[in-house]
Image 1 (tube, rainbow, N blue to C red):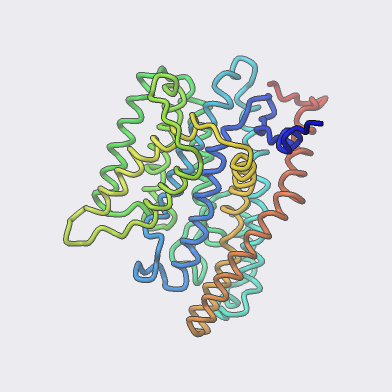
Image 2 (cartoon, rainbow, N blue to C red; image 1 turned 30 degrees about the vertical axis):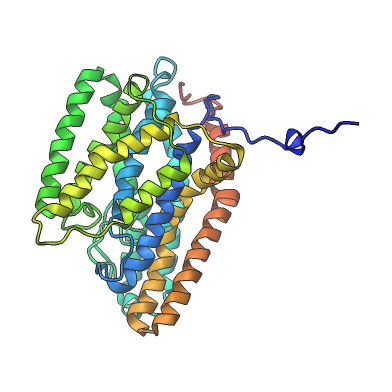
Length: 384
């Protein structure tokens, strides 16, 4: 009597598919999850010390936003470049809003609640409620507003990560109206000009953590413009470029090493800006390309699927909780052990909230909105 290996009966994990039946780039989804976790840890370490570098272990994790922009350009090109003969611009905007905006609204709501109930920052209660509600309305529309107390000079101070979603929306508009129509050579020229602009910004600032506050708000589009258009160009050129395959674990390790690298000392003028420029302009596109060509096993694929699904909720929802944690550290001035315990608790809380928001809010809302948008209205049909 013979028996088959146990793994022959084990259920296989298949790649997720888009609404159009295309397989996800699972390694890229996993890398998005890796970068999202790095952002959360970067904020947990940086907020209680008012962003001082001494005590921060992920010195360059602000570059995760640039990595997100690059991933977005690549994935948007993959999902939509071949659909424009069958899809209108209005339909594209509707699909992207359904994908992104439900969590934008939830993030704004959590930011409002966090600001109003924070027990550690008494000065926040001095802000008139109509002002807070006005800012909440602007946050729901992803529009910037004057910084609230205990929020530095953030342009989206109820939920700071929203600043990058505004850039994402701008990039999607530019893609639908202009970028998708450009030939590959012209798109390459756009990428080159965007790279020069980003280099100039980094030469001036010596660090890439700009764009989220009013003092550097005009630099945010420079970060988005290069990485997003590079992602579009990478997708077009992917088959003619070297097909390196490293997998999710090695590529995640590279990201962590880059994010954790020490700041370049001031004794080397512009050195930190040059390091971060090299990472964003050269290394991140290479990582995206490697991830797109990589094949992974069943266990790794399951991890990447989960990491990809949780990455966006984790990124857009974590900040309101960490603001309370930050105010606890800054106003109560607890012991180091208490801060570490609060940090661990905050991390576990934002993971749990992200999972629950994905399962019971984001995915059901998006399914309902997709079903509604697929049914032409007697008054206005969305072509697609």
